[in-house]
Image (cartoon, rainbow, N blue to C red):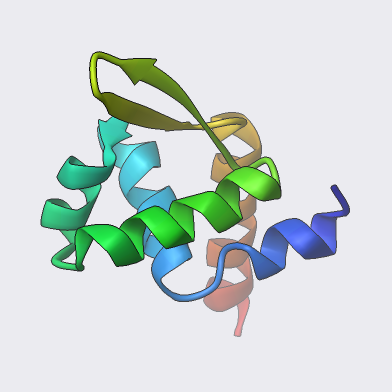
Length: 89
C-alpha cells in the first residue's frame, strides 16, 4: 500500500483509533468504541478500512477480534514528525 493511501486511512476517527491502539495496546472493537465514545458499528467500519490499508491487523480470540497496529514503530515516527512540524511553526 502506498504511503498516501495509509495517510488517507488515518483521517478523523481512524486517527483516534490508531492513537488509542498505540497508547493502550491491542483492543477489541467494543473496548475501542467505549474508549472513544463511538458506536461499535462505526468503529468496526473504520477498522475495516484501516485493515485494508495495512494499518491494523487482528487476532480472533473466542468471539472477539483483538486489533493491533501493524507497525507501531512507523506510526510513532509519523507522530513525532508531525509534532516537530507543529513546534517549528
